[in-house]
Image 1 (cartoon, helix red, strand yellow):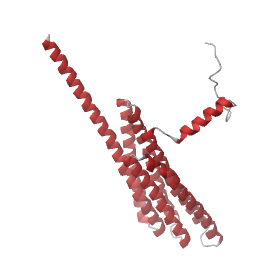
Image 2: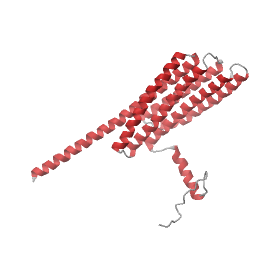
Image 3: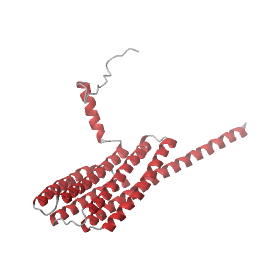
Image 4: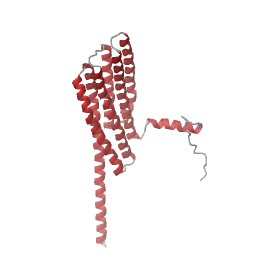
Length: 268
């Protein structure tokens, strides 16, 4: 009898050990994913001033190099997405661990798109190659580039340290980049009106400003995902709460959609 008890205890101990090892492997995989995301994001931070220099210096060879390098970012982000999906399928994480995987998936998409936007600056550089633009425009390009780089660096650091306060501050900093974009668009109009740049260059520069502004928006989104991972908060929660309150007070359909009334009894 005692021998059977020992065998049962041994089996339980072995099962407990296997579960502990499985959890360690799971946590290591989560941390590996986080570190890889940080590395890719840091690469985007470095690429922003590089792409800006390519634009201002009209470096066609550099533009081609950066465009080709984007394939590696695509490969690495796809790999990370597949690893996250595998974790969701095989590990069925819950609570904080589930938020960690979901955040990683969403941040991965933000990083990949930001890398594309940086590359788009290089593509614009090819389209306006051979055209000069005035010092005021060049100065504003540098300012937008630096602010976009700073925002993305802050987002990367916030994710690395899981600092929700730092992540929340990114949204306020983004307003400065938005203001720079508006200044730049106005300067483009003035430069074109004065005959210093032609229409094609003006259009391409306006698009470039949009690329910088969107990089800033993606940095804000990463900050929101950091806050979600740490606290479970998302900005959409506030909007959803307001909408629920509105529906309770006024169930009028919005956008032609009938809002279901939970207080109306239905026949079985």
